[in-house]
Length: 205
Image (cartoon, rainbow, N blue to C red):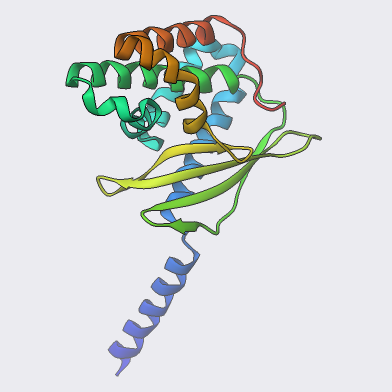
C-alpha cells in the first residue's frame, strides 16, 4: 500500500513538472534569444567576425537552413543539381548568420518576450515573440517551426507580420530567373560580404 502511494505521489509530481515544462518549440526559441542577448552584451568587444563565430552554432541549431533555402528559391529548386543546391544552402547559411551578427551587435537594454502559448498549424507550430527595446515600441516576431529529424526548427521568421522567406523569394526571383543558382550564390555572397564589413545596427534599438 505504501509503495502504491509513493508511486502515485511520484507520478503526480512528474505530471505537474511536465505541465510546467515549456513547449519544445518555445524552449528552442528562448535558447536562441538567450544566445543573441549574450552575444549583444559582448558585441563591441567581439566585432562582427566574433559575433558571427559565436552565433554560428546557435543559428545552425535553431534553423532548418536547407528548407529555408529551398523555400526562398521556389520552383526552380526542383531543376537544380545537387551541387547547385549545396552551394545555395552554404551561401544562404552564411547570409543568415551574417545578418544576425550585423543586426544584433550591441546590448542597450533590449529584451525578448516569448508567448508560452503555441499556435498549431499542422505540420508546423507558430511561436510568437517580441523584441522589446528599452523605452521603445516592441517589435513582433513569429517563428514558424517544423520538426526535422525529431527536432523542432525554424523554417520562417515573420517580422512585423511579414514573412521573411516570402520577401526574399520576391527579392531574388529575378536573379534566379536570369542567372540560375550561380547568380543567386553570387548575390547572397555579396550581401554577406556587405553585412560583415559594415557596422551593425543594434537590433531595434
